[in-house]
Image 1 (tube, rainbow, N blue to C red):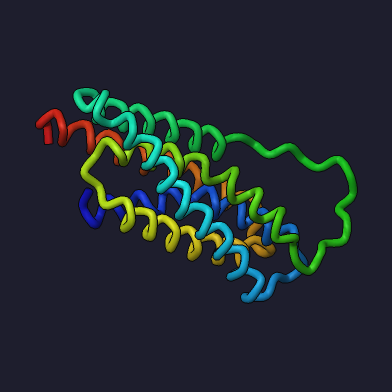
Image 2 (cartoon, helix red, strand yellow):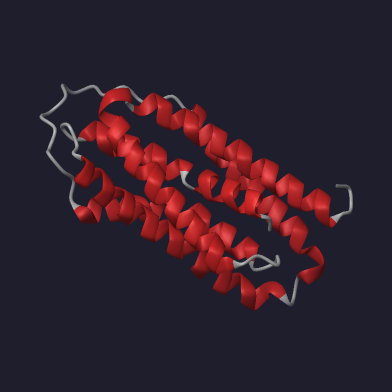
Length: 192
């Protein structure tokens, strides 16, 4: 993978964490930078570790399906991209109850649970990276760093901008994943 595709992959993987962080920021009463950074680091560490786990799982299967690896990567990235676009276009349900008082910070376990849920796609990408000649450590570090940055910014923006921007970021991330999968497929087939 090139530096550009690694960077694009890292930021597209961080969009669901960004969307979730905006929601976290919207749920907290005026989050301070320290709280935003704490949330960003939790998301970043989890999102950076999950591609390594996926890579290890995929590495065991790579020798058995080497002839089809580019198609597998394409299908995985395409499916993730479509899922992210669908989630980003889904209209959130309006709350029926009156809003309660917002807390000053969220529990770390709640942030970690959200980070694990939003990192499932990074696990799948890690499986796909096992079929490519990608530097998994560099890619995982890039995903973790991009996610830390995006989640930190998301929390800070969350109480001002609400959920809407987060959903649109997830749509953009999905489009980027589909584009990366298509680029990998066309390069491997010799069309690019």
